Length: 158
Image 1 (cartoon, rainbow, N blue to C red):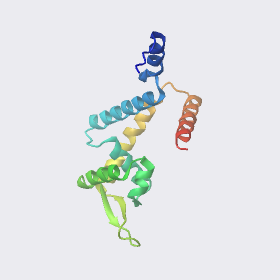
Image 2 (image 1 turned 60 degrees about the horizontal axis):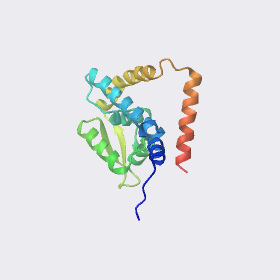
Image 3 (image 1 turned 180 degrees about the horizontal axis):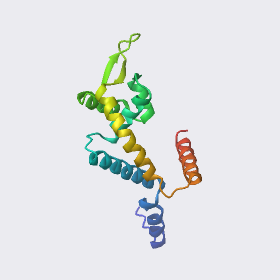
Image 4 (image 1 turned 45 degrees about the vertical axis):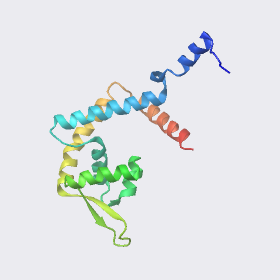
């Protein structure tokens, strides 16, 4: 049995699935634009770091000596992804993994001196970037936007 959609049904389907107008598309696009722009800022300052690596550095600069799982959970990265990021950072001598005294299967992650130095260079760049992101946005608009994003996250996480 062949079902042929009417012209009106085709138009309706096309309108429903216009991906560029969907919230998930717009959020994903915004995230990608932000990450790309921040990466450009780092490169303009001659810093060879990705936005993912910066997130790890910032987390450890705030709270050093945490487990890999804690970093992954904080940054919403799965185990293979956070392992890859940490492996690259270890090769760059930005972090060190130290076996946990109580459970040798686990390691705590610490910033090295190089990691601390680069985190301190990146912090003001990131802060300036955050200010650029919120230019022409009132405090109230930003609070409403943040609350809306939190509601969206809550809606899809169950």
